[in-house]
Length: 337
Image (cartoon, rainbow, N blue to C red; front, side, top):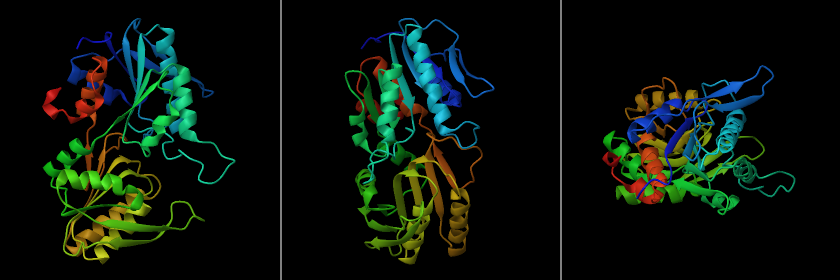
């Protein structure tokens, strides 16, 4: 199909490498633009080219561990960029957020005097003028209900097929698949189905009086002598992963690979995982972590493997620009760009 309008790719913050990768895959150019930060903390985004009547795609990594700006600083810059594109009379504006900020805060969890951050951020993006938001594997797909489709369409980019292929090519799959807790079993089932292998469950107990504290993990199923792939949508401080891996080894598991769409690796995560890698070496088995480029990490250790989202996002952008299907673009072979 013909393009809905000329393609325009805009980079915010530290998303220039991702945007340039998409541009190369599509045979396009990155539109000149820049973040401007004032000494008092105010900001704006300036587009230095004519974008009137174009189909604009604004890329942003809202969480960059090595960056100097907070997640909310980066979210604010996206809003400035959307507003700038609209004020410049862009025909349509799509925001590409591989990791959607606030995605875990999608409900109030029994506490009535707190907000729902997912809904707040959705309303902000809509109000700024976004026509569509593209994100990768959000924590809860029900967050689509936070958007008014008459104003802004919310599209989810699923990565199971492409990510599984990456894991297979790098020898990172196992005999069975699990997740860190029962809540992640839906994701684990997708990977197990794609890999045509077994599924086991882990039951996690938390101490809710303390932040990010797991007291125990129970293995439900047989992992004795097996290699295990642990999948989840997100890794933050790594407490759940450590508890899960220790429980799997105690149950007789051998090699363990942990794979997640979004590896935030905050707090003590790197140290905790490095300890697991050393324990694995002492046991004569392997421990590895695989994450996507939704969260860029500089110079990760050799046990960490990065799956680039650029080919996937390139196909999705091309398809949306041509009024095509996002799901079909995701399923398209990697050489189809």
